[in-house]
Length: 396
Image (cartoon, rainbow, N blue to C red; front, side):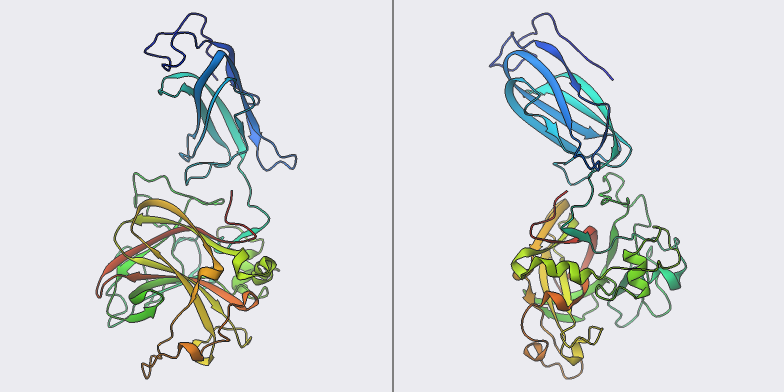
């Protein structure tokens, strides 16, 4: 922990022009605590203290040494105490982590650092009570017995004409061309990226491949399907998948816990589709592919989603026209009814499906479809921390 106190006048090159040579730090820059637990019930915060001899433009940059997460405070004042109260939030898309050392840098607005202090984050900010992770277990292929790991979530992809033709060689599939569990199986996938990590783990969901001409009609025109992630049954708290995913089960696969969660009951608290949000972090490579965020509704309430029997789904497209991590918070009322082309006769039977209205109480699965922008096109899907929130967008 380092403290600096300047007693002599600083040079014009070091100090911001508006304060010239009179910006002395007359009280040392320091945090009011050396450790912090942001999950403490008393609502713990960190206050950065320090005083100048006259108002100056200052900047405090808080940087996590492991996560690369960043929080910045800016101000013009003599006293830092009232303008630099940190509650564990971040400006970047990387979350501060448990047991992470962070360094707070004090500088003038021209970038010249004049002091620093360190704080150990014992616990990072917890999940708000009005939101829930939809894929809380992150599983690698070698973490679990395949028959057990499939319960966490399912992954499929374009299987015409050869089940294994369009998959990246590093992604393993079974004899039927179906992936039972996929996570970040390569720590060198993005050697220069700070893994997003979510609130619980350092893995993200990753899938890439190439369209093999299976054409799908969606909200924004013809798409070419590559692959998908689908959640467990969000309504059936007694199913093994739900008990593994939402029960008290270790991240590494174990026996299903006794109880799961009826996630749909939580979503109903939104009251309307205007107050329900589906959120996800997406890593883009500007390849023009698309991810369709999809909800599936069990409109006939038989316990499964059957598009052939009248159940309907809703979707919102995320176009990968950007680079790096980006957070999307999508209002459910902005989702549109997905088109259904009968695979047998090829006719559009969209209007025959479901009850033609969004019904939160019928949501049974959440799914992410990866599609190419052109026939035969390639694409990749890298997503992290898919959540649903009611009353407000995802916050942390």
